[in-house]
Length: 90
Image (cartoon, rainbow, N blue to C red; front, side, top):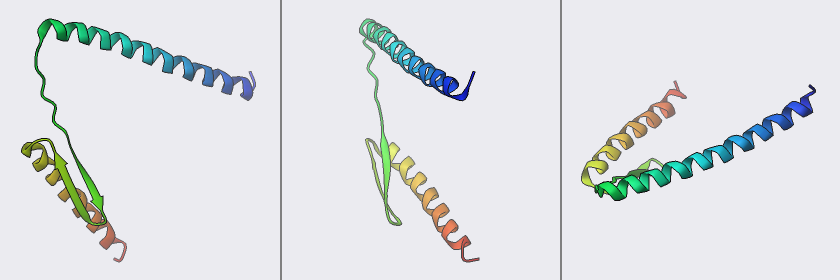
């Protein structure tokens, strides 16, 4: 088997894996919808994020709890970036 055949085989296998994953995701989503209809359980989703503009972090979140976590993560990232900046001059 030459390299061209091997490359084409790998590409073909990649396509098969992608389509298999799409099919499995559709099946799982349909199962979750039928289960959620039966249970009618309410779920609360929380999200947050950090945007760095230069050295200044902008923090946002859907609740105060998430904003506190994002603030902690932003402080850690800021400290790491400052340390990495200082290390290059040592």
